[in-house]
Length: 434
Ligand SMILES: CC(C)(COP(=O)(O)OP(=O)(O)OC[C@H]1O[C@@H](n2cnc3c(N)ncnc32)[C@H](O)[C@@H]1OP(=O)(O)O)[C@@H](O)C(=O)NCCC(=O)NCCS
Image 1: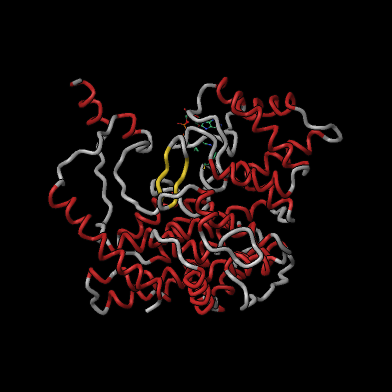
Image 2 (image 1 turned 180 degrees about the horizontal axis):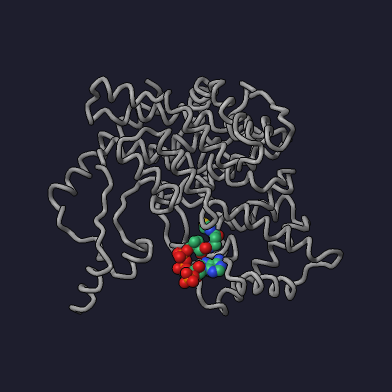
């Protein structure tokens, strides 16, 4: 058994009594109440999910296993010559809560390499789709097509004990995760580089290999590592994470669950916002013609978007109430590596103007930028200008957190999810009694 799997097994055995005790001794303790606004309004703020991989504080932003983004980047072992950590080391960290040693991170690198070969039929599935198919549709279909590979399904059929569900799930999740960079880069090269596919390099790590297969020089390998880690996890109530958990709660395997989560990520209010930010910005720049962007013209363009009933992509959040630290992290990368890049300057100007515009507009509870407001700038700078691909990058990252959660869902035996619904008439009756 690998070091990571052993460490995970120990963590699971240590953790199980905590869940059992909470259920046995404190099952009736209330963690909150649900209002009519929450029942109608997308369960916003209803505290009814449990996840230990990350926690999202509205003011501070995300912490992965108790660490802020800068702390994670600082603590995890780095790829030699690179500024960002091994994605494989992050997988160890998010699964166990322990910062791996360099050797432990490298062990996961080797483990992933051994699992990374994508079956040929997956490429056939992608190629069979019409050429104007959205990259997210290709990505989701590719993941789903591998469902036949599931170890969990076979083990379950053979009569696996519930206590052991996590083990084949862990195997499935590692197998799936290790293949995602190859699948993502394949979709990119097929759609946007005339099908000129670059074979993986067996010497490289997750992020390095992705950059290599995309056909982009350093430091894009670091960009990839940073992106995948930044986008990995945002506790479990967001659409993609919740979907993976929900679908997985029916004991559907991780291929079914992740493919479903990716479909949720493809919505414009969720992951697709990164595509829409660049679409919006490029439309805006095109309309400017020869003129330089100013704060006044940006303000005008933002109001035009709002007045036409559309949202400002990349701004607002269901939980956050300040600038997303994932935005800040990318901004810091730009300040260091591309401070004078014109698109970065435009994004900065939007950052100066948009919060005030949104506050004056008076609807959004959070006028500050989220992760998606910045994602496209760095990609564009390194030559990935095909913005319909951006959400696939998000998806590769999001797989890390959601799959880690799925392993823990199985380890702790979380049941099938089934909240109770009421009718509108019932809500009216409850309201009339108040
Ligand atoms: C992220 C988002 C879906 C959160 O939704 P939410 O929790 O319902 O947000 P709020 O409670 O602040 O929404 C209240 C109102 O403000 C509006 N609003 C929120 N963010 C807005 C934005 N960026 N631009 C314009 N209006 C916005 C909502 O559409 C809603 O309007 P309504 O009352 O007419 O339905 C929302 O902020 C949004 O659509 N943002 C733009 C898309 C985006 O960047 N998504 C990526 C998120 S990581």
